[in-house]
Image: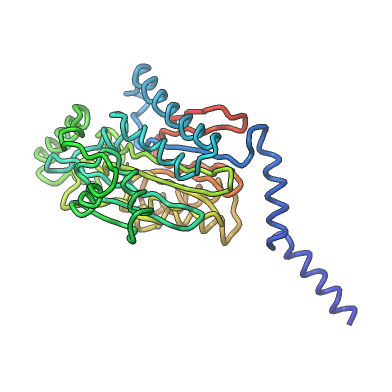
Length: 353
Ligand code: ASP
């Protein structure tokens, strides 16, 4: 009898850290390590994995990228400080990046093979697992807000093309003329690829070498992850996709579990990179699964998916990730990734390479 009793005590002791009680304690201890500002707030953004290479980045360009990233990360964090939800913070920051011509989302979206802009976005609520996604939009100024409307004002998770735009007209969503998305640098990028295609006599669509893709500025997707004062996580991603995409191609950004994922039980993730690979690996959900099932720290989970699995499959890109305690992870296997976060002292930090 005594033998069984001591065995029972041993089992309880070993299992304690994994029980609700244990988690609560870990939570408190981890929170105390976070620093002086409200320890439960967490906020990170990215502006895409395909950064300008160090050789082509000028001080003026770098200053412009840094300024917009800082503006977005500060605005999102301020919203959290004011008591707004993680979904609000994600939407606020992404709208700022969508309005900037520098990033491949909203105003700065890349061109399709036939010279159009087709935008994709998604958002997820870690508290309810509610999600909204839109793809192939041609007239929506801020796709992230339409994704949120799909989540909150419809029965559905994903809407595409004309149908999604028809729904937008029933909501308070800004529609713009297609010309709004025209920018010189994205147009030039398309022309360069088309020229290259003609010279080589074969399509230069998604799938050419990584160096070539970066030089053609294909990446630049934007995303955000947030943890609010109520402990709710949210994630969102918005993109113009990849330059020269054809046939209604849709990448990972609007696919829940690939480009975006949030669950209060584990983490929130937003991805950027070569979408076809992110879809096949279910990258965003995979990072959170590592945290949820294998109890991995967030940085290790992000590195495992990006630096091991994605790398092995031949894809490139990166993720920003935030766990339920507010710990941050960032991982990429491209030359750089535009990103910004708020550190433990409440200060905005912007990084590129
Ligand atoms: N992931 C996006 C896509 O494949 C592109 C990017 O992140 O730049 O559409």
